[in-house]
Length: 336
Image (cartoon, rainbow, N blue to C red; front, side, top):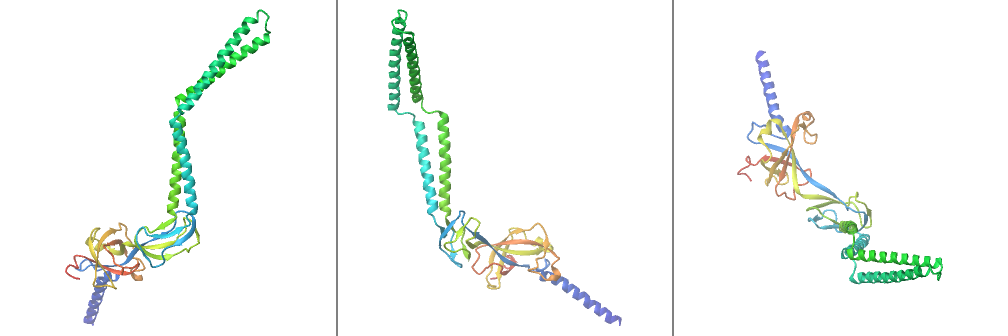
């Protein structure tokens, strides 16, 4: 009986040991004590929701779902007429304000200065004539030849002539001095504001054309020709060709075997004999529970560390969510 119990105990111990050493394989990696080291993850491809930065009516859609596009390729266009009108209006406003500024900087023309000088000389002649009239009236009044009212009129005429001469003289000085620095500065500021408005109008006109930001594949065509869209509306969903990442998880005992910059080989079920070169680009500093999508319910409470593998020159067979195997490049040296 004792021998039977001893045999059962040995069998139980062997089973427990086998379960423990098989645990890492259930988690998607092999134990660090093994020479071979593998992680299991999924392909992670970035997607971009594309839309216009301005509102308008879609006039043209150049691509459809499944089309491969290059960076800068035209994907769609809005009705550009409203933006063209806005650009023309802004351009005309800039031209008008620039002409005003140039006029202020140039000052008065020589003919304008000559005209002002002639007016001033004319006012001086009127003043001299008014002074002569006043002198005669002042001499005749004591003799009673003219009335007091006539003397008053001569006095007023002299004063008005002197005032007109002073005004003409100041007007001539203004033309000769040119524009005030403050007026030039104000006109320059108005011109810069108009130029900014013109740049905004031109940017809006350019934004009426939607271009691909990167190489990729059109996943979804959300809008159709004739639709009215705003900057918040998605027109296309683009799947980027690069970068392609692998999202995997590593247990704490195996953290010492990898680090950022470690070279790895990535294979998929589609092409198990053709490995892609990759580099570990990121290892999370924070532990997390094993994701439900990759582990059994019994092991979900185990803590793992998320890492990212960047694929060098990914191929078209790597698709979003595809399961892949990640191995150390040193472990696969000499193998295909």
